[in-house]
Length: 310
Picture (cartoon, rainbow, N blue to C red):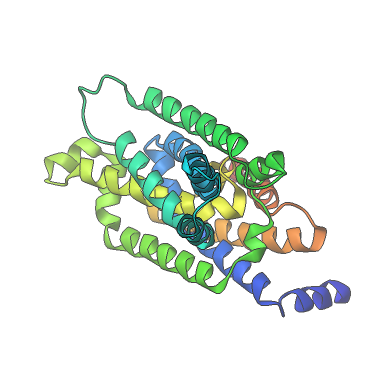
């Protein structure tokens, strides 16, 4: 036990480990707040669809500098990339990918939950089209304009998470903190409206609540959380981070507030445990967190059955 404590003390003396823990806990908290609403509204598929869109967006952000250089070299008569184009490509490469990924994911969220009963393509079909299309376009771009020699590794890291959570810079942490605080504030400010829209949308409309607008707000918050969680668990595991804590809390608690509070505690504890365990055991961060969430879910299922019999 002493060796583990000494090892953890050594690791936490490094700033990048502290950054990873801070960002991971904030992402887990945001995910748990929104997860309850998504599960109750049968909107879980939205998170999965937007995560695939985020994969396509991050692929675009990754290959954009290479695309610019390749196109400029093909257009140039000499076959060389002009210096100004090189500087532009290097500037894009150095910029944070979230500046490209976030607008694309937000746009997809707006399109998927745009109100309109006369839409020719309904919700589930639209999600399937956008998610599969985004995956295909993202992989095609990464294959056609590779930013490194290990394409399979890049794709796997983007889909299932990578060690990039342990290489965060201070400005990345600040951006994540600002976005996470924005999500938490939005949820707290519009808590009662979100509560009304979650449980009875028709009644909420009858009382003057703009349900379509709040559904759109939920989609925007979902997009923010997905962009935040990309580096932590990868695009394919984001839905687990959002859904498992909520489902676990619902095994024991029945009130909306109780489920949200329990979900937040579960999510934060599992994220912290997952990050620490992945450091000690040298396992993938995202997979370790999701396995911790799954374990808690099964324990809460057992506890729920025991309390019902009691």
